Image (cartoon, rainbow, N blue to C red; front, side):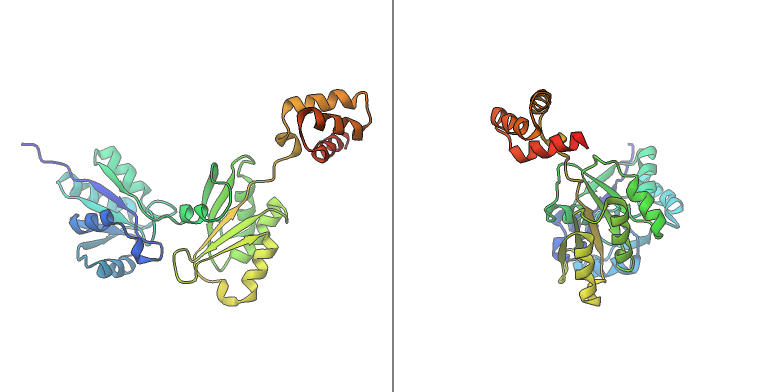
Length: 281
């Protein structure tokens, strides 16, 4: 009889509030043979809180490829193994990619156990567009690298989401201004699900002012979200309206052409006037 292969369970854990652990996550962590954790001391406290005494294996950036071999061996021998990170969903700016890829290549089933994730938690409460967004992970440590990283994001990508450290956040806000301008709207989510959770909204100057009012505010985990650029007038106004405006501009003064186009298409006269002005500049 062929022995059944074990699975690797990718288990999301709380990002702050321990009550956010799911029933399925608790059951999985209780039942597996061992748990691969980014920091065994940190994760040990969570498991102790949950009353789980399973063996912990350290799996981090420096030993992941080497540790993967022994984990895959366990799974092929029929054992189930769980993967957790320090907080949130593993692999999202955390170790685990190499292990999951190698498990797939070895025929070991990889089972997600979903739960908290800082970027999704931040985005859903930020009040920024959620239909399209791009997560760019942790920002680089140097200003020039951060600006290059931000400038490389396509203009039509929607909301931009990144992680940053409290130590660098003020410098990062300056880099955002250098790349996107001083008027771009931002949301900084801080200490998500914890006692001092806060969403600071506004321009980089607004958020900088809030952070510097109290040194304690420049502490904790940070998720920075950058709103999409405001749509240009010719992207908001339909092609048929623009065509009418152009025809009328060929025969009439700008103000009159805008007023007639607004009346024909039930559009705002001032928006059409500003669009026509932009064509002449």
